[in-house]
Image 1: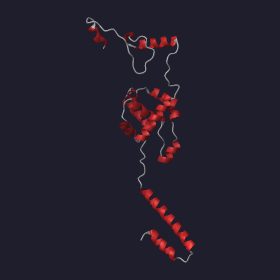
Image 2: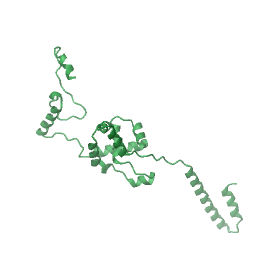
Image 3: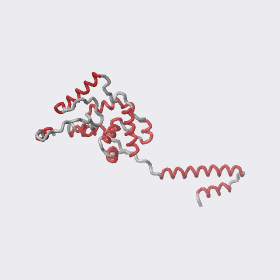
Image 4: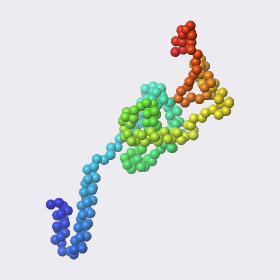
Amino acid sequence: MSLQSSLSTEIDLLDDSDEEKEAKKDLLLACVLVGEYLSERKARPTFYVRERIEWEKQIQDLSVEGPEAFQKMYRMEYSTFMKLCDIRGPKILVNDEMSRRRTGKDDITVEIMLHFLLRWLSGGSYLDIRLSADISTARFYFCIYKCMDAILESEDLAYKFPSSVKEVDEAAQGFESLSTQAAIKGCVACLDGYLLQIKVPSSGETGNVKAYL
């Protein structure tokens, strides 16, 4: 006999009116249902709270490796990275209070979110990046898209193409000065590539080609 049936039988034996007995049975049923719900809730697996990556330790480890370690990993200097954090940090920040209520820990910082984005844009796999930072796949992509949206919406980080004759000349001179032996001429902007017209060397000049390669 179940606990509910046993208590229901004892209520029937009480010297109460039928209405009082029905009211007590309803209350008993409500208590039993609440008890079963709480028991089931305790038995359910709770969500896994992962440890956050320690950003300061990450920077210390990279500095030990050498001055170029940060640049190789994130494709930018540390000072540039911190400037990016300052420019877009307020837009990327999330609600710390909501994170503490849910996980009992502080939320992911701006530096760590940009760490995800830059490593991912550099060709890293989300499988490796999210595991090294101990976050879920859903959380990883949440950080990625939040950072990308924040950067794309920034006027300070937007591409600025030359709009006057003077600016066009300055941009062309800049590309020319940076190219080997001023080989790039007439280029005023470059997003993903540059088509450079060259003169095919003659058979007598091929010996000199290797020197340029």
